[in-house]
Length: 433
Image (cartoon, rainbow, N blue to C red; front, side, top):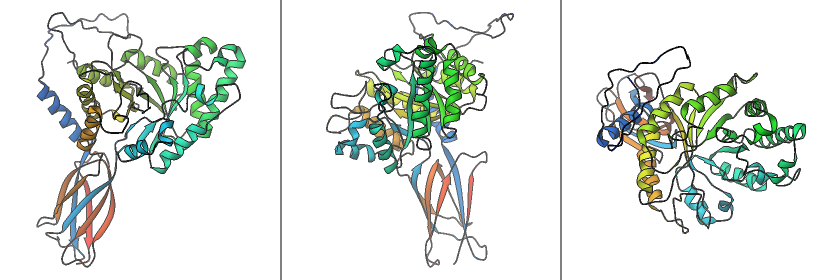
């Protein structure tokens, strides 16, 4: 059975391709049956998946000092921090715009990426003249508001986005400059970022390979794992889940690039991960699912790193479809929306207008962050005759408060709700009653 799905145009044929690494094997396909799914069925599967992979059933029992069940104890479980990393990119405009700051910090964003402020052409526009002032200030802003930072990026392979002075270097000079760059930025922010996009878009472009040879990307990850062994090292590219027609970045090509880097001497223990930029025009939801299913075979973390949808009448609707699908996929471990604000407009998609009032896309994000348990969740009720209370909770940090008329003071403690192989997470509480 083929897992995943495809969208078939009613006016034309569908083409299925099969491949094997063993070229001596002939592949025969027989008895093909295509099962259509309604939108309702598809949404139902998403919801089932969210219940399974994003939530855990928590069972609390309250008892007296003597071990007797405490019936009708009131239990309030208040979320303090969500467990799923969800956020939006920012840029230096947020440092001087109070309205931007207020909007951003009022949302349940727990991770961010800086749009350009860490890129090489920004931090070293002239050789030896490094300027990290904007990136430093953004890192401090994120720390102040308890927001994790993805380092973006150490290198970018697109030749159109390089500092001009790099083109005059060759051979050992170029390699030395690249090594200095990597150790400079990664050393500066070691322990302050959770991840690095080390070699950005190296499925589509090969600027550094053209200067340093075919193993340049693999060498970068080798250097990176030594420069910062605390951060996860991402590949990061586009059109792997957006466009099936882009043969440079189909899942098979992505996995091959990942294997090549992992197979480079010294890289076997590198903390690698898959970054999916996710710049969409018209999403093909079955293709998104089947592509992520394929990538999951690498058994490394997978993040949606730069999600946006091109402007158009269906922009908000498409954004909602994509967010529902990727959040429900069990292998997606984080989502960052690419909507850093500028007075002149965002890269392709904004969430607000210039007064920081929601656009339709912003309404979608607000609605779904609430649905996905990323805002301050609350569960409450009373214990039964056996002293038990149960709730299905999204993963994250919570505060549990238990009161009872026979108890002098409330019982309060923290609770981390995490994925578990057990059917439920247990909490046994003894109260002085």
